[in-house]
Image (cartoon, rainbow, N blue to C red):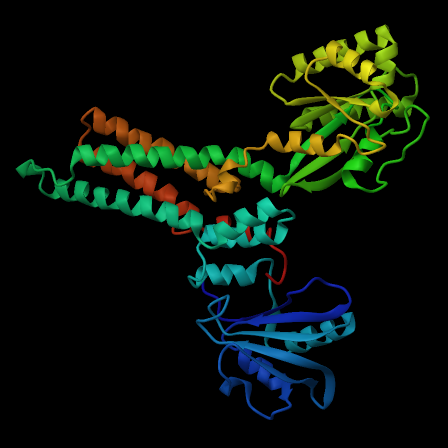
Length: 465
């Protein structure tokens, strides 16, 4: 893939604002910008140093479109590795479109999704995993996902793989060299050192593969279903967690007829809370649909928060029994999912009544969604379900499903090499499995690629990046 043309796109979000940035990249980017830019200093853009900014006007013939700042980045020291020009204009929709249309009429074409980053990859400015991290960085909406994307974009993941790959490649070269001296029956590759290397590579690959479980929830957020009978305070709890009136709160049971979702960041981790319809027997058609959706959301959730009304349980032995039965059902149906049991509205109870409830149901958390008591404790409990140790230690964490798949395949091939080595497999057969393992390493960083793969990755980018 070699691109010779010049592309243009809006690099800032569409819509009116104080300023907008229009980006050009390609071999003629500076020449085209110079054609329509009249600098207040009268100097030519092409004669200016790279990484400089110039005040002037964008002109369509004798017509002035806008007063702008033009930034010049000369190849190869630019984001794409090509000549790049960024035009900072006023954020009027009309001005943005006038400037873009002007360049489209003069040998520019609109950039496709992710094409600037694609050119950066093709020109060796980023490897493929770093390029994918750009999209993750743009999409990051909490501290943890931002931290992981930054680490990957800086090449943390790539450099870790590169060291392993280099060592594996060195041994592969020695083994393949042995094939040229097969008749002499010599060994250039120390088998004991090679086995130690393979064991070390296996450990690293397994650690990276295991990190995907954490990386996936950090990247996509952790869905938490808030469930319980009608009118126990689920919507009030959602509002308390979000610190806003997101859900309708009413004394009328069954107010929530559908699921309501919203996301907050706790300790830098995204949690997506789902306020579900109350679970009960009902003849109301609309409410019954809501209850059906509740069970669907429980299936999708990674954590279940079960809420019950403390005053009712304290005074009603039948209700207390029903709650215990409901909790047993949830535990039996979802044994692998963390379950947080909360007694709500404890502000209406005495100390003695609270102690009575705690003796009836073990592992109970006390809460008053109305006053906010216990909300911080709940947040800390939810955060405890996420293994943030790797994040705190700044370890490499995998968040990309494509990387995860390639690592699994690389591990499989490395295990084959290790088994072959232990069983005394011939060098030519070992070399085949080593080359396959190296192939999957290269697939991650983009040394091994194809047009379909690049198309799938970069079409998920926004236009202008």
